[in-house]
Length: 105
Image 1 (cartoon, rainbow, N blue to C red):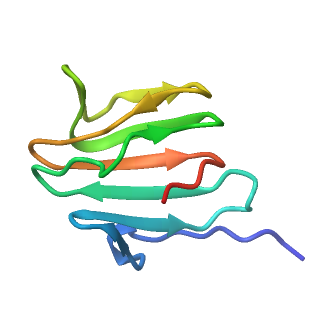
Image 2 (cartoon, rainbow, N blue to C red):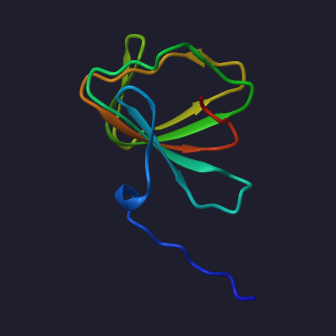
């Protein structure tokens, strides 16, 4: 069997609201590295402190992510090591591309 390329427009992938103002889209992958897109509406705060037992790898596609007093803008890559605790928020809205085995709520 010949491997196939899968191409899609991210906004065409079905989204699921996981918290008010926060949606998740699961993108196809071979399963070894799950890939998800998270959209957070303006003024949204993740509802609880997020604790990781594994790596969390994030690319900020658009908007701005706020972690405490620090702001991360589109085009930035964030690597949260195992044991990291954080509570993401956004003032203007943000789209995140998340890679890895961590499975958010």
